[in-house]
Length: 312
Image (cartoon, rainbow, N blue to C red; front, side, top):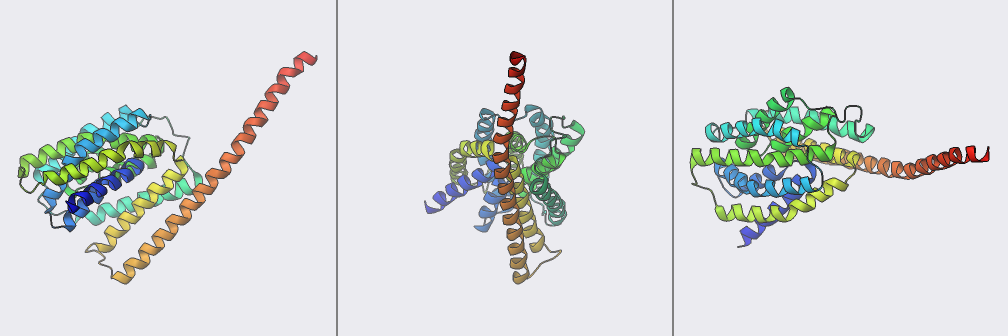
């Protein structure tokens, strides 16, 4: 019973982060299942079955708060479901350790770009509203879906930073669209796992616990992403990507850093992230102070223009 309660809390926390930042539900939940001895395929299958419910609830909540671009959902979700099914059916039993460091380097680069851009320059507006093309979203969805099913998570960490880096979709709609399209990935991956390994090793009680926690957190997360300023949200997402992939690289066979080196790198990453968030929050607060003054100035000017003809 204690384990089920713990899993429910993990599901709640993971969905709260995922729904707010567009990533981390699968990674967080799968990591816990692997830590208690579940084999990789069963762990990924368990998480994806739970995600069928959590992503449906998250997508509905994001849609309610206006965080979803349905064109993006279709363009990235359909190829993503193909990649997820292929990965779950044919490659769930294979190790992804060799591909892990390569993907971590790519994501770390994107995360650094996002953190710097949003912290120093805020959201890019010169491209906002421009359509995201199929030739970009299609391959992105295919790769993200494949990584998600074979690694127990990856749809958000691959899809969210790539779309944010394009500057064509504001952060809240990027996160809402990624979370909504993840329903298709969860369904396809689950079907693939059931075809490949059956129900062996899947703990349906754990599925239910993760699902309950996620369902509770989904509407809260969708509300948060609606109200968190884009500049702050971008800095937060960039920091999560950097921290996650720094950890992956340091633990990989490529580097295999000692515990001392790891903790130094973690401390430096956290310090940089905290400084970036602090700067973004301060800039946002400063902009909020100047906006009302500008509005009042505009109102005064308009009133003056309206009064001038009367005086004449």
